[in-house]
Amino acid sequence: MSDSIEKFAEMYAKTPGYIVVGKHKHSAVKPCHWFEQKLFTGMRHCYKERFYGIRSHQCLQNSPMIFCNHKCIYCWRIHPTDVGLLINETALEKLSLDEPKIIVDEMIKAQKQIVRDKYPLERLLQHYENIVTVFEILFKENQPLSLDILVSKTKISKRKIKDALRHLLREEYVIRTEKEIYALSKNIKNEITNIKDIEELVKRKLVNPELVKKVWKEATSPKHAAISLTGEPMMYPYIDDLVSEFHKRGFTTFIVTNGTFPERLSEMNELPTQLYVTLPAPNETIYKKVCVPYIRDGWKKLNQTLELLQTLNCRTVIRITAVKNLNMTEPEKYAKIIEKANPNFLEVKGFSLLGGARLRLEKYAERKGLNTEDIAKIFQPKHEDIMEFAYKICKVSGFPVVDQFKPSAVALITVNWDKKSTKF
Image (tube, rainbow, N blue to C red; front, side):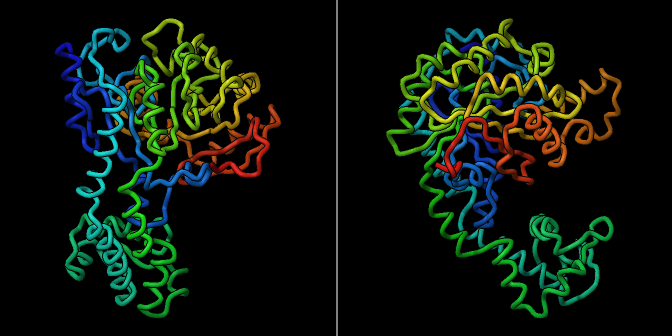
């Protein structure tokens, strides 16, 4: 392994939340936001649970390769160039690779360790107690209280109170009257009359401690592998065997790919339960601007992958990762590509401004002469924006929107699916 590649792998190992597995450090595991939300609440889950029945707390988010042949400007992934490393991520022929069985064993072991060490049950149940305590103080005082006063009255740390308030604000049980000044909303005042009402409301709508206990126990036995964390998973030459190893252990699997490895996909004997192919643009010009590929024929390769979808014996999804002022354009061209590929489903999903995307999009905005004070407003679409764009595609194609999930700004559209349920 070259010094630059080794430094890049070490960077991932030091990045909060990531656990690099295997002797050769090219694979990683990281629980997502919704995994954590499900553990803390027992109820909140991601859109994949709503759409497909994938239980968020038993989902192992991973990648067998931290490398990629794209440098997408909207990707949360940290690119080598972001940290001053010059690596040709398509020239890894001499890279030593771990065997699929070793990777899968270590990923499962790492996930179990994460649940036990980072999310001990006592911590999760304390979160419920903190929400109830903050709620009760605001109810008893019946007036706006500052964050400092809440800390003083509850004897709970400022960080934990902020975590509790985040849930109460989301459901609009609490409002922020000024910076770090909080009060109960008028609507919730009419709904609760005593402390018991508060506990019942929290259990019903925010955090249910009995469900938390159940979910925590189940989380130590992951059942689904989301091969989608970082990098391009199809760069791993033994991806076929990796999927097979997960399936031998009773897992369902997703692969999320940028579609630039049609040859490898066509040769796979063990396909994932569901294959996602990212469609980042309606044409090659926007594709090159958005994905900044290392390879010259990326758009051609992507279209070859899309042509394969109808021949695959697994569920298929095309996902448009939609970015305002970047690729949310020409819906009729998206529709034409999707009609030709004929996947089972189409997802139109809003991009989130995370990680390396902020750095790259700030530079992009500067080059375009855009106001960079609020990058999120420029590039991150709201759910309403996503639904409007999704319906534009549907108007041209005639495909129906069958579901949506506002917290993730995503629409689900059926293209070639005649069953009543979208769940496994």
